Length: 429
Ligand code: AMP
Ligand code: GLY
Image (cartoon, rainbow, N blue to C red):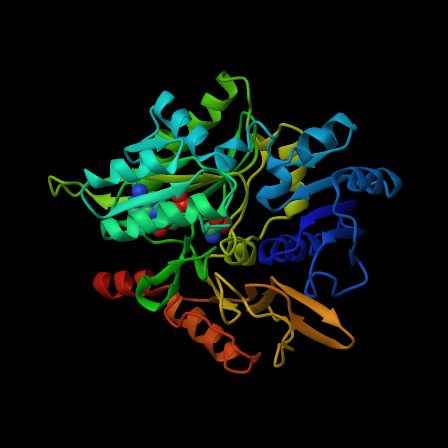
């Protein structure tokens, strides 16, 4: 079987790595990939990135199926275009990808289908948004409509910060639409499923670390590290997320005439109820129409089923017949980013000390490229050191041990990935 994977990040490296373990795969092409993806002769990076060029490539090379990693080509309609050309592809259509590409579409959808989410107000220009802030309690959350690589949200503690965020967004992003949302307190988790439009297959649970710095301080990023499984998602919370969020979303999209095929990622906030009852409150912070990055790295590390079979079921509308087996161990992924990330990453530094893959550790590449015989940094998030261990503590120790040998100028990473799980393990033991 010949596959085409679209994207260049750590998520795509993790998908390609897992797919390449399938005995059914003859060749994987990655558009455009990174220095980590093309590391054996069954995997090849290609330079085509334009949708029409990719369609021609898929036809000429008899690609059996295409998997799309990032949100931008999905929002641009790559799935619609491939299907019109008679090619098999996994991902949502342009219309369905609005669940991520337009926060306002997603909010309206959640209200219509009674999916629990934070209260919000929408504004079409900065002046109205500024006026609204004057009468609100802080903290408050300011979001810009449209795709922003995880950088379109500011949790403002003061009115000054809220006004600054509105100015920053309306000056820097193409969209002038601002969404102002009630601040929710609690613990976040990533709940990711695959859907063929009707059936749903849940992936292992995970938890990301969105803030740049230890102790969840600093600006929001695309994600600085993740682990799987997420202990906050107890069996009861799992069932409630499926019942109250995932199924109503897949059914609602179908009823609205825009069936959702692809990865659906629900960012869930889990909070204590105001009346202090033991039951937790669940609210959706956001939907993404793709698997998360860096969540994909620990999730793929734990997957034991042939991923080609699963994608095939998803594309052929038979996900009800698919089942995924997971490694019972914990996987941890620690992101190493460039100096200046997320605002102004410094690029072009050689990376040294990368280990060989083992059963317990894979260093997934994000923004890397080969130059002469060196691997150099080429963007904000550079690597994700991903390990498996019998506990979160063991997996994490291994990851930091490996990181101590890796070097590039200005590298930064969080030292506390998995701290919530470590804390809850201590409490429960
Ligand atoms: P989003 O892209 O909407 O998930 O937002 C990115 C991050 O901002 C989330 O992962 C949260 O950490 C934070 N965030 C977003 N919305 C809220 C909210 N209503 N209350 C508290 N934090 C939020
Ligand atoms: N890690 C969060 C995301 O992929 O959006």
